[in-house]
Length: 276
Image 1 (cartoon, rainbow, N blue to C red):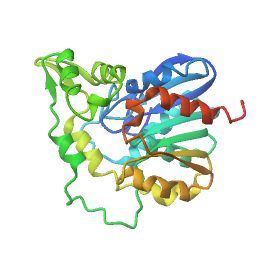
Image 2: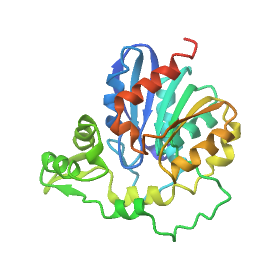
Image 3: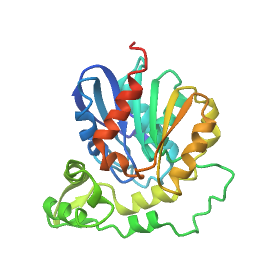
């Protein structure tokens, strides 16, 4: 149970070994990372969470988006999975920020966090929401329903960015990111909720707390030239126990495009941690 009486959905993907928590990006959900988990279940006991308003976790009535509450969700899921610590976390975009918030609040929880371009921005910049954002406007224009699951898959597979996604990731995004509705199927993450999450992504103060996080963190930066990729090296610099890994041939959707490569990266770094 998280704050605001939110019951966080935790998906058990199975496997054996050290517990691994997969933490999703804005607008997605935990099942999008099942293709990664499937490649790791001989080495990890794999789990994923859905943040409030995403996937199977409800958004409280009249809740205004507050990224600190996403940190509460990550903390609740991590404590449920590994109450005695020893957890490995992989966080993508918003999910990376959520895991960093959880690690700051409970320092003994994680042995390692791999954060793929976490949404953590410097607090000394203008946080005005007046500037237009392609991500915000794209979320608000997102089509909310389709006649069927198959129609949704066909739509996303025909245009960027999802046309580049691994087919299993795209299939799982639709299968677990839509619910039956009178008109066919409808998104579980409402477009306005996704848009507000993007709009307020620079409003939390996790940047100021980074020096307090002594958990080992691997920060991944893609080859994008702006946004989260541009900030990722600065995040690594502020974390006391971190390493920066650059993937110039990737982009912000890298874990969805190349789940096999992402699984290899997680395994390579986690293998260097002493087994509890």
